[in-house]
Amino acid sequence: MRTIDLRRDTITLPDSRMKKAAFDAPLGDSVYGEDLSQNELEECAARALGKDASVYVPSGTMGNLVALLSHTERGDEIILEENAHIRTSETGGAACVGGLMFRTLYGEDGAPDAKDVAGAIRSVNIHYPKTALICLENTHYRYGGIVVPLEKFRSIREVSMKFGIPVHLDGARVFNAAVYLGVPVTEITRLVDTVMLSLSKGLGAPVGSILAGPVSFIEMAKRYRKMLGGGMRQTGWLAACGILALSEENISRLREDHENASLLARGLNEINGACVDVEKTHTNFVLARFEDSGFSAERFAEKLSARGILITPSKANTFRFVTSKEVSREDILFTLQIIEKVLQQPSQ
View 1 (spheres, rainbow, N blue to C red):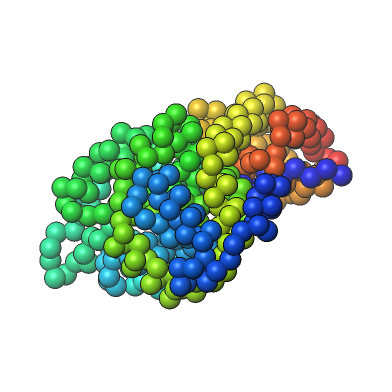
View 2 (view 1 turned 45 degrees about the horizontal axis):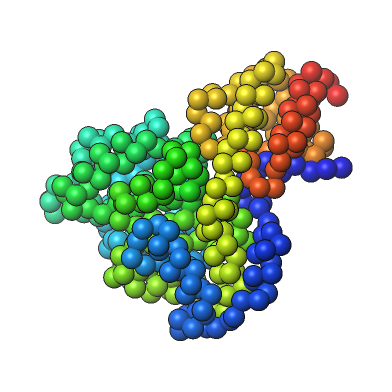
């Protein structure tokens, strides 16, 4: 039975070019700066993101935590959107490891309003924690891969400059955002001081993320990466895949994932009992509600899994579908057929 995995874009596998590049890559001790492939990857990533330097880390979660630690001191406060991945899905590392506090704000389109950010910045007072950092996320994971408008980034950047507070971007899928907006990724990243980028999601590398920013910041980040166990030594095999992940051809391919997600969203809306806000299907995420399906969320996912379709229950009657290079247009059409059959035959 064929399996179509729409749970996450982390299921992407390295292609034949990546595999060949990996096994041909020179190796060296990356902690000593002697792995040539990692050095090349970090230089390539910094250029692509419009920053002075970057550092390769094992995961996006580590990259974000390293960024928070490098920007702050214990007891500081960070402003971020209330459903930001850094707050909801990174195991409380900021509090546990960094001794940091969160000041959360709601943002309907993935980022808070600039006036709310300004209002949340603490005045200097011995009773208050210091506001040390503003965190943004683009695309926004919890809101279905939506792209935050550049106007909001610009307004928040003006606030950050006025108050002298740096901005960090959780840009795990920032290239998806750039493709959706039809702009160079630097149009987004120039509005923040530091950015984390995942190589192992839609870009298809097997492991790793990038943290980019000013040279002095990256030197501090390397210390925290080592502290957290992120010194991986002979990284050339992985870094070679990351270099290809950042190729223009590979980044442009993300558009195909967006088109497949749009096809899925529109197709689901034509099925009785399914509902998708197509206008908010910006990139490779689809959030779909199945009202009165006759199943619990878990049971519905099980029904589809038994037919080879893997999806993720998000909340009651809502499911997340994520397209990637492992999912073709034909897979989407087949998925729509299976979902319609399951909904029409709830007793089977």
